[in-house]
Image 1 (cartoon, rainbow, N blue to C red):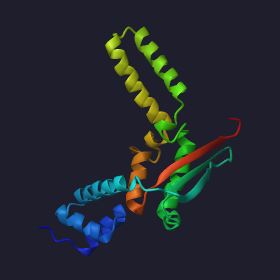
Image 2: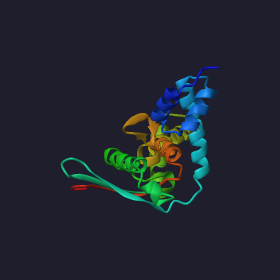
Image 3: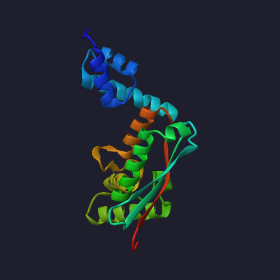
Length: 198
């Protein structure tokens, strides 16, 4: 078994933001392997975040972002469970990053459940017509429509979009990581994106 030093624990803590004891346990479990220990911490964090998802989030902040040139701006309401967490740097940074992401990616809704059903049906109809007119057999058309609708969700739903500062993760992944880091449930309640002339 690898000798886990205080310096190793400190380094892992700085990389992951997890607690000292959690880092020590993860390093012991991973036999000193940093990558494996980081992965273990992520899995535990995601599991903890899932447990917190049902808890009510009534505190929070409204974050804003004004793009240089003052032609584009965003307001976003992000909630957490306590005002203590709402005042932490981790929470404020998350809110600021979400506001900047919204400015860059122009989502239509936070999640799928907020999308207009009429618009969704029209999209499906367009995809169906395109697939049929290209000569695809009927039994494949539905699969094509399903695939294109999933892609549509990833383009217009904030939580499903690829995060602009790290395309390997979605906004939902970033949210889950932040929940694990701050130890409370967090929800992105609503947002408004303003652009001059729109």
